[in-house]
Length: 84
Ligand SMILES: [Zn+2]
Image 1 (cartoon, rainbow, N blue to C red):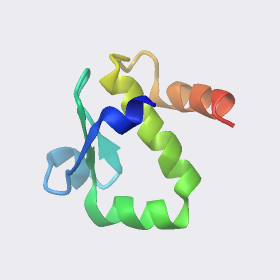
Image 2 (cartoon, helix red, strand yellow):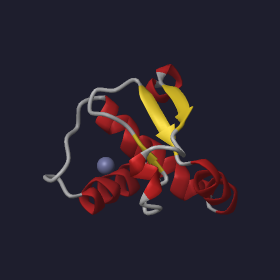
Image 3 (cartoon, rainbow, N blue to C red):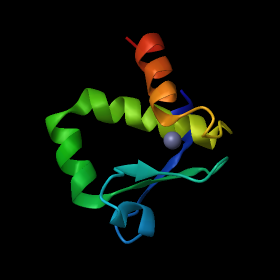
């Protein structure tokens, strides 16, 4: 499982997390997923399914999937459709 090979780091000090709209992010082809601190933790607690899909989304970016296009909701829709 690809996600097991990735690293996870606290991204709470990063500008991406500072927007508070993001719960996690990574660089294209990056091996590290940055988790946005308490927002990530509390959402993972209250909605683990949502966070699982979010990590798959970021995992796809680390595999090289760009964005815009496809738009983030389109990526999420594919994940929901394929990962039931
Ligand atoms: Zn994305």
